[in-house]
Amino acid sequence: MVLELDRPTMAEGSSSEGDSGSLSTFADVTAIAKYLNFNLPTKLDEGNYIYWKVQVKAAIRALGLEFFIENKRASVTTDSSIIDEVLSRCDNLLMVWLFSNISKDVIGHVTECESSFEIWKTLESLFAQSSMARVLQLKKKMNNIKKGSSSISEFVLKVKTIAAELRSINQVITESDMIQSILSGLGHEFDPVVVLVASQKANMSLQDAQYMLIMHERRIEDLNQGSQTDMNNFSANFVDSSDKKSQGMKCRSIHFQNRSNNGFRGGF
Image (cartoon, rainbow, N blue to C red; front, side, top):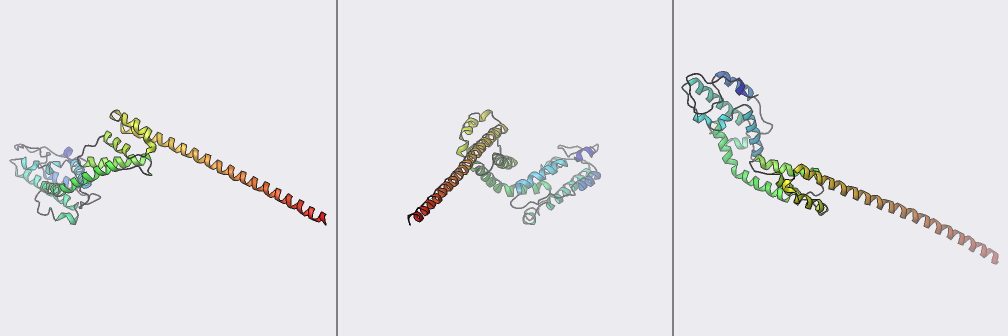
């Protein structure tokens, strides 16, 4: 629920050079406290900042509180001490909520912050270097990923997942980029369709490229299955023929032995 819908406008006589989100009464503080009474599934630690930031920002926007982490609080001037107090309390509530979603391994970096904006910027600075390293790591992974034993659907999903991670840290990844990554990771058995998709990549959607690759994959599977069936039939026929030949040789051997025995008795 977006609190903006329930908030009264700022009291008459007050002025603002920024947008306070229409916070003006202590009822707003109570409402914010109510809606901030939850924690994220995962607390911020040294390895999950990107995902944590996306979740936190979405929650803050859903509650209409991005005003605070964007530092618009500093640009607001009012003639009302009540409004100032309301804004201060709301900011403190957001600080408490942010603290509750930060692990003890990271919390020490922000304990001296005096506003939610300070917490936000401190964390951005703290993780900026590791975020860039993550970008380089993900781009390398996307460039080098291989299909291997995965199906086309599984392989495409892996590429999409990497692309989503890059987009979550403000990296521009187009469908053409993903198609190129997919084509580069395929084996030689896909060469015919790779040439076709590559020639139309500029005007082809990822969905269309995936469809063509899946169709080619199924054709390969059908051909392999047909070859295996032929091989099985050949093996069965060979075994059957060998058995019959063996039985024929056995019968001739018995017949020859009987004739030999009869001839021996007849000679004496």
